[in-house]
Image (cartoon, rainbow, N blue to C red; front, top):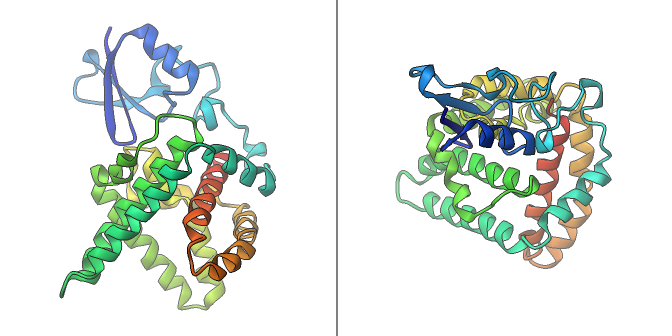
Length: 264
């Protein structure tokens, strides 16, 4: 039997039964990735629905395809997350910096378009943010990473744009009550872009809902993770902003490891 599988908005295959099991065993295929074979008609299904493909009890995989028990989610110390981030970036600093610079060049260039500049930036930010998250997910998982992944969010443009727009809207509405509710909402929705990048079939509202569930009890931890970079940011200001070329990828890699730690 020949199988096709989809992840990060792209389909792969065909592969035979043995290769599909190998992909599942190594974590290259996750339980929430979609699979299809000729006997399934027009419907793709989660890989977790294929019998005997994953070990018993595996639902949504953690980093590397290994399930993380609910009571162990988010227990990794922030100092360990930042250490893992540095390890992930070793040998990949050029790619990480280049992706961020390219993203900023595109957004700044779009904002300078006469008349529609601001609207163009609004349209592009969501897909580029999802693509940036997809690139770093591949990076921290030790998989093939290339600059083109920055644009993978455009393959799910509607979801990426909808997620960005709804997050902005919801945070704005909560901020009307006071700054603190808006800040709490921002942290609650902060994993939505990773979720969209990680799940090709998820919708914008579902990504936001999953982020709220995922961040329950972990918002303070993410806030403290942000605080670890305040001193570095002040030092970057002394370099006329040049230091941010390294700080932003370092932060993004740390947040990506945070996502890996808190997802079930």
